[in-house]
Length: 272
Ligand SMILES: Cc1cc2nc3c(=O)[nH]c(=O)nc-3n(C[C@H](O)[C@H](O)[C@H](O)COP(=O)(O)OP(=O)(O)OC[C@H]3O[C@@H](n4cnc5c(N)ncnc54)[C@H](O)[C@@H]3O)c2cc1C
Image 1 (cartoon, helix red, strand yellow):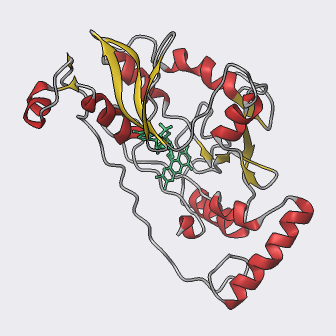
Image 2 (tube, rainbow, N blue to C red):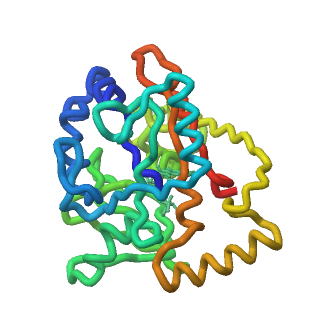
């Protein structure tokens, strides 16, 4: 729901590590291409893309948080995806008319009925099919039936941070030292697969508040949720949607390249 790109220096770092085409200048046109920013297009934002990006509702508590940070000497940024990424400010969000503008809403629903698109749900991919080192399709378990789906052009793997390397390794793509003891025939020795995963710690500090404008699981809070639902159905405005996006970000610690690593954010319940 928060729309935030990586730090510019992260992309430049990837390129410097030997990945041509991954610098921030290289990826920016793609960010701009798929973005439909509420404020229209600009040097760093797109206005014509599929993914709606808007500005979050501002609650009095978060405004106070931002104000306090500014008073404490932190600089303010009006756009975390702009030129100045480290500061106090308000997140952009992928919420439109009080509802999450998910990637499925943005990219899949508009083309759902194309004749050359088939979406299979309830499908569990078991491995990537290979001819030599060339991916030619996938083997999947679909509603109890094991099927081989052949690719005309290419196979794109998007099974998540754990799922993608897992599938590659099940397909014999990965470090030989790990695959062999598990009885997996090595098709392509690639030592980096399944390695270098990094934790993303999320430390949440919770505070009690008597502020009745915040949402809460209590008798009063539940009644407010009911009112909020009616308000949403009538006006497409929803405090529940707004609550999740009231977060801010402070100047952050630096790692070896000087890029921010530990954003500090303020949210209401943070989905908990
Ligand atoms: C609590 C939380 C809050 C977050 N908040 C934000 C936020 O506000 N803004 C933001 O930008 N990002 C946020 N993120 C991060 C964001 O959710 C991920 O970066 C993003 O979902 C990654 O997308 P993906 O498509 O690469 O992988 P995923 O979203 O993980 O999708 C992978 C899909 O592949 C499926 N899959 C895996 N293995 C197989 C298989 N063998 N066969 C078939 N299907 C398979 C999985 O079921 C899953 O549906 C948050 C993450 C968490 C955990």
